[in-house]
Image (cartoon, rainbow, N blue to C red):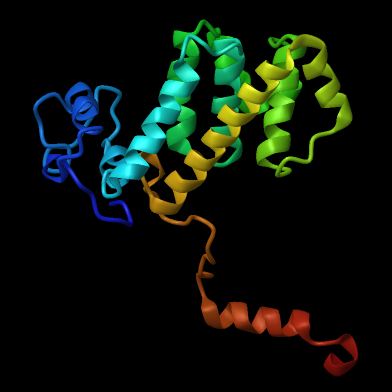
Amino acid sequence: MPRLKQAGREAQNPFAEPIFNMLFEDRDPVKQPGTATGTPGNWWTVFNIVPDAFKHTTQGFQFYRSPERKIDPKLRELGQTRAGFAAGSQFVFSQHCKACRDVGLTEEQITAIPSWAVASCFSDIERAVLAYTDALVLQHGRVPDGVFAVLKEHLSDEEILELTYVTATYMMHAVMSRALRLEYDDVEERVAEIPAPNEAANADVMAMVDTPKKDQD
């Protein structure tokens, strides 16, 4: 379950209703969750507890899908999908793999996004977009001059700004999804101590390892 409460149709959010109708038809999204893509749909219901936040984020979706955007949708989706993977969000990565197909990326390219650095199926500008995404997400905006030079060679300043804004937005969505345990990111922390089969024996071994040799003599 998400870490925060949810709000369905009872919130009477005018910005949520048309989206709820599209995703859940006539169902209440809290009582009868589930979308056509297989997600629970709780990203929408959690954001709906703050209607202004719901409005702000959905307007962001309208921004990147607007026909006024100059950035190639394929490059945009490469950035969004790689941002989901690099930030460790199963939800963002999975959903945007589907969006990659919608804009015409090949199955080979989609499969190669996690290992793009050793893949041969991307063009120079596609590799630059993937490298730029890693610099945004993994290096927090520390972008090598060489990467930016390739972006400038192929894209206008307007396209680069759009790419930067959308990619960074989806880094935020990935981080929030993990923090709040939304959708496919509703998972327990897997990095934890695994108890040894015999704790007493393990303690004896560790004591021997930690004891200097001269003390053992």
